[in-house]
Length: 89
Image 1 (tube, rainbow, N blue to C red):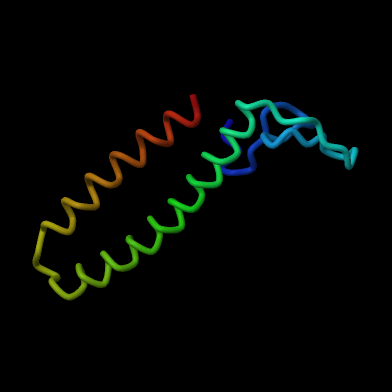
Image 2: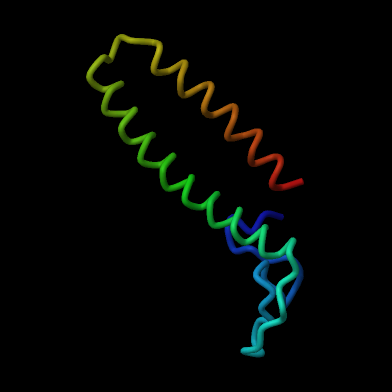
């Protein structure tokens, strides 16, 4: 099951190396540091994607008969579904 952004690797340890509930912190491995940076960047990209979707919707509303916007959404939806499948595997 996906945690959709929480970042849990295993019960009690988040992706940044913190022990949940203990207040302590383990030394991060290089892989954990890289993961944390990439995780933060991915979250920032999701914010940008949300803004781009809103802007795209405004353009589509201005041209209600233009099927190209629907095609754009179909392509975006397909790529997002692939991404979700990757992250849930």
